[in-house]
Length: 374
Ligand SMILES: [Zn+2]
Image 1 (cartoon, rainbow, N blue to C red):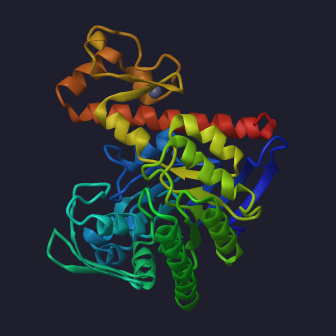
Image 2: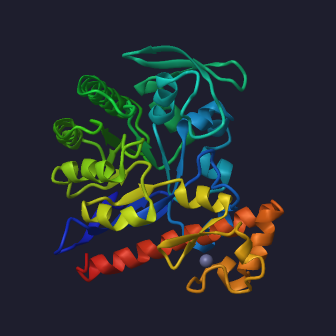
């Protein structure tokens, strides 16, 4: 098998770089956007539509898939690519983000979807909780997270980490970071004892909003022998400035020969700056979530709310400057009509356009890096 990650060009202006991640399910040209397909589906899109958009890679959430249908069901079905027919490289998270969001507040869980399972026990070892689907006791430990991710079968996996809540004290953030580091060692050991030829593990940098901890965590995680590195615990309630600072602090420590993923970040106006810090891949729910609310990207940088009455008679394309299926075929008026009538096609057409806008932004970014323009 060819090398997992290779860099073809380093920008002369910043830490931005052009790379290639090679997986058993295809190649990802980096920097790249990672479409979010939480439950094994990028909402409202078929896999073939996703291919037409040019989406290179998608992200699935272990916590959600373990809750339903269960990682055993996915394993028995031939793993996630076969089960979902998403025939592109896939990433899975560790479940840590959702599990610890639950642990912070069992009553009002900050989960990314509609489930609110009850946390039963939190310890140094992990978290146990009861699924609200069927009352089943579900356990997340470093080994369990790895086992679930192995069963699901995504190409890129994340080590089990504690996503610190915001705002956390320095004392707590340090404790959580130390735990995350110990858990990384256990995930690495699990992978060594249970090799999976097509799956690649990323260690996750934590440390909350504290410069010393972020740097300490970056140093530790990068020193470990994992095929890739991710930055976690950002964009959890802090300001945009704080979010960017957390990435900037660790940018000098990031590996030159391994890919770097930024977990849960990717608003249009953040991406170029973060690419300059050396980030290769971004997963973010925003383009797809906004699309389903009727918020449509315009000219690659602005947004409009298609629900507004001013679009009722607007017969111009959804976005004049876009080459996607939606913009080539439909008007703002028609999309407005679909949203006002809550027609399912509206969600599909809006999602196609927002994801295509993201893809075009990354094509542009890769071109700019090649020309040393950023
Ligand atoms: Zn479009």
